[in-house]
Image (cartoon, rainbow, N blue to C red; front, side):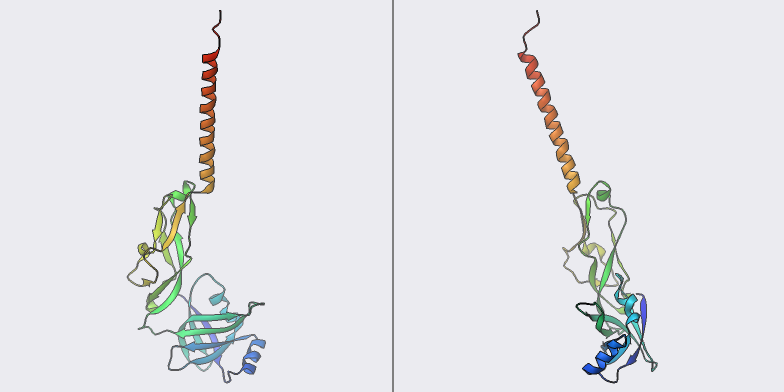
Length: 215
């Protein structure tokens, strides 16, 4: 998995006044968990743009000004309810020998025959929760829809990998192709036209049978 570098500084004080001063200076207070003890640090808010404001998922390489470096994942983030500014971020330190749980984006690949026939593709899960060693965390989980016809479903079991475990029930549907309303409506109109044509033909036949013979 790709990594984003976050350069920060250890926080000397973690009180409310110090936290407010950091935010006023355009910095975000952070905590790194998973080590021997929690590590409090701060970093420029702009440093998190590629890590937070993206549909992709990355690990974080935290580099402190004293030379310390940590590999971590974003565990929790708090936003201001009005301005959406980042208020606080929690990270979890990675141990290459221990599995970690993350939500990984699902990437649909291939062309569905059902969609090309007019069906409607549904993708209810844009991300899937997986558990793996840090080195085995994928950037994406590829979901091949090239065999999905109208009415078919792609289950999470078909995305299994030896490198990670997907933490969803086996009957979880990742993608499916349903009959489009437009197709149903069009078929209904065709049936109505056929019935109308059959009715007209029947009426003509009845009229011919009831007509007087010409002298």
